[in-house]
Length: 283
Image 1 (cartoon, rainbow, N blue to C red):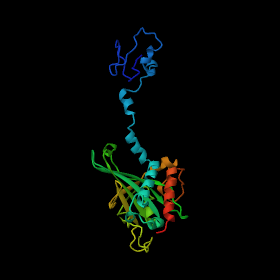
Image 2: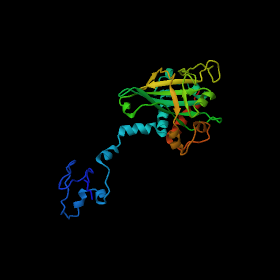
Image 3: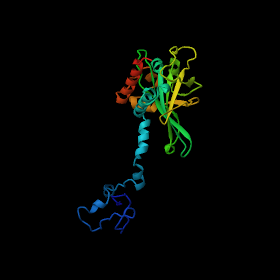
Image 4: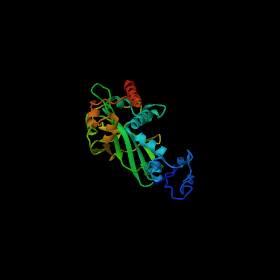
């Protein structure tokens, strides 16, 4: 029977009184004390080898990395999206001449929010996650569908810079572009332009009027307004993330059409409340 150190799992070599790895003392062969076998693992006593020290250490979670991963899951994206919208329309966070006009939000057929991380610590790349919601025929908002852009390894997220973007979808066709299972390229599959800003937006602007782009984009980088172009950015549906959130396989189209109502989520309720406030406000 192979015996192993109870402290680190290293095999206890014959005639060794201490573990060669961690220095823990082993009981002698004649040690009949009740605590003698405590220096060895239960797995060793039962003839089952425990995980190696390397395997044990690999299971330890990096708190910062885990926080990033949790943020990229749909519940984390909902919270992030709520904060992003708030920063674009609340006077506490942004000057009036940089705000998303509330009139546009009231007329929007859909809203997409994406938080992108640009990294170059190991190699350059952009990773973005977010949500999209669509306005339903009754004026309410659909459940959130998870979206993402780009791809980069976790190691490159060290020292990365972050940009938050809001895309106002002005037409039903613009929303439809996000309802498919594949990828869409902004500027190619859907026209997009930098959105107008300020409280006193031209009163004549409205959905369907000539000159209004199918989608308007707004971006913040490190909390500051940034005129960052999203032209050429490729966005994909994150179907696995949707499945985990809704509890079954569900398509973006079913979500955005209101067929699948979202599960109860406190942050999602706050997100909807924020949009309702913008609906109630008058410019």
